[in-house]
Image 1: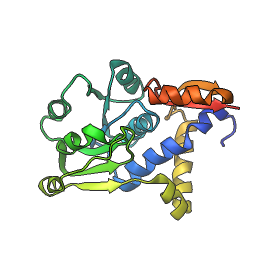
Image 2: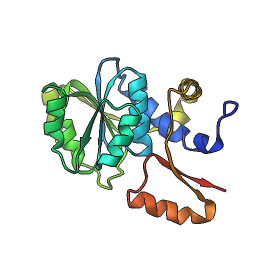
Image 3: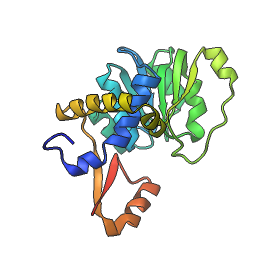
Image 4: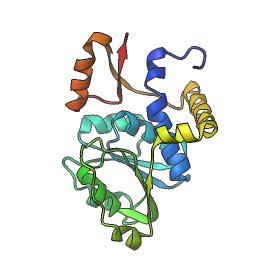
Length: 217
């Protein structure tokens, strides 16, 4: 930990920001000026992707299920937002990108939004499979990759950290530099004493959490 870094912030940092950084920089090779769509953007890894996407010079579109969550995304660097509980995801992407589509999709959710997002990807886009917080693993029609000339790219930070420890340390060094410089600002929704761990999990399951929650022994 860098000197002076708060333990609560540190505990919520490495997994989420490490995942998002590896996904966007190593797997998608996100370039300045490209458009990034983040699904589930108000969650811990989603907000990390919003911030890192902006840091890498992308135009970030955040998609989430409420206006409160989207306001949080704007505060963390999103240029555009989509409420996919009340708006048509594909239509809004078309409007925002003038029909071009998005260059990179960061998807930690899976479920019903994965395929509509993929159908809205730009030519030679990259769809990042980060997780399945929505509970359902989508079945994707592979002809979409042919029609779009796009890639579906798996992201498993834990395996990456184990197999490529030196590369992972280089990534973490860059992330911690950005954190100390104030370019990244992890959002802690709430802290709980250890004996209230069940309450913390209950709030996550009921989608009451923005960013991360932290258990404090």
